[in-house]
Image (cartoon, rainbow, N blue to C red; front, top):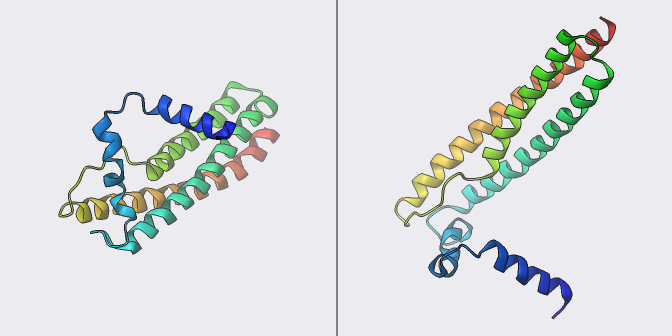
Length: 156
C-alpha cells in the first residue's frame, strides 16, 4: 500500500469516527440521485451539477472581490466614510458568498424513500436555481458598483 493510500485511510477513519456503523453501510443509499435508474431523472442530477459548478465559479469571483476590496481599504480609503463604503461592499459580497455556499451544499441530510425523493429533489433544485440566479444578478450589480465607486473614492 502506498503512503498516500495510508494517509487516505487515516483521513477516512478520522472524518468518519463519529459515524454510526449503520450510517457507513447505508451511505450509498443517500447517493440515489446519482443512479440512472433511480426515481429522479438524470436531467435533474445534471442540472444539480451545472448549478454547483456555476455557483462555485461565482463563489470564486466573490472571494476575489472581497480580497481586492480588503486591499483597497488599505490603499484607497483614507477617511472613515471611505472605509465604510468599502466595508459595506465587502459585507454585500460576503452575503452573496454565503448564498453561493448554500447553492452548493444541502443543509440537511437526504433521507427520502423512492416516493418522496423526486419532489424533494425538485424543491431543492428550484431553490438552488433561484438562489443562483439571485447571486448571479447581485454579483453583476455589486461588481459594477465597485467599478464605479473605487475611482470616485480614490478621487475624493
